[in-house]
Picture (spheres, rainbow, N blue to C red):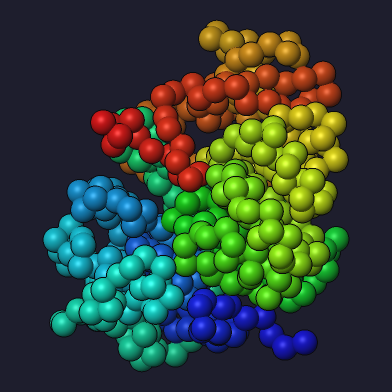
Length: 425
């Protein structure tokens, strides 16, 4: 079997080729004086350069910060300024929408918006072209040799999380120690299925179904890229198109959100029966509570390949359950994974007994500690009973399985993405 590939629409690239381009981009970023602890803002839809820019940042010890491209210009400007972004990589059509929001004197590298994204979002082909006077990402990185050596352990992405204040919080963590990197890879292997139980990475095929500005698809997609799995980028989620992709590419792994399950289940029965899904080996979902009847219907349709984890950008995954565990504990989001501690506490921070509902707090020792970029007070307020509060309410049963009941704060989840109440108003 040949090397792993990344597919988007009709375009196919070798993983090795994109890794080399990332190494060239890393040299270029380093030549601009960008290095450890700095931030590269990635304002892209799911595309090859998303992988390249994120990997390039890691090679020089910098953080990649994916930015939600649904943001208004003011929201984008806030993240560019708050993160202290030293460079921005952006699709051509998105650049046109926020040009005036880009801070002065920050280098901007523009990527032509590819045909499959133009088609999926109904964009103007003219808007997909490089705007006059802008720097092409492709032309720029081609000038540089691949960087000779990368950072020992890249710090990863600095994700801006949703909240209720109107301003997202940048979650910034230290680069992992060698021990944390090994332990973290083991946890990711378990909760995302990238481990020896499911074969070698080059035998794995996954579709990135959600936008990679979101914490979970970001971690999932970049880890799949790093370990050398075969990746198909779906420009925009479409339920029947996903079934087509599973059959055509013999997809083995998926990361999804419950909204996608709902849309899949709404397909006519004749459509659902039309496609061969027997290649699926490990499907995992997260990001929002999944109604019991929805998950049971997915397990009945796809078989016992549906897994779930719960956690946050701040903590990583802290609980996990497979299909068998879920069917025995309907409604659970899982049980604490190795090296994770999960508690339910009352308003005074005291641990509650099994079955009692309270605020969920958790932590895992395999993930480096974090700060909220530029906001120490928020970080202090997130600490409760020595663990991290993610703003969820729930309870633990007698077997240690966790159940979610509500959000501790007012927030609406749409398509697996948090939306501020102020935005709805």
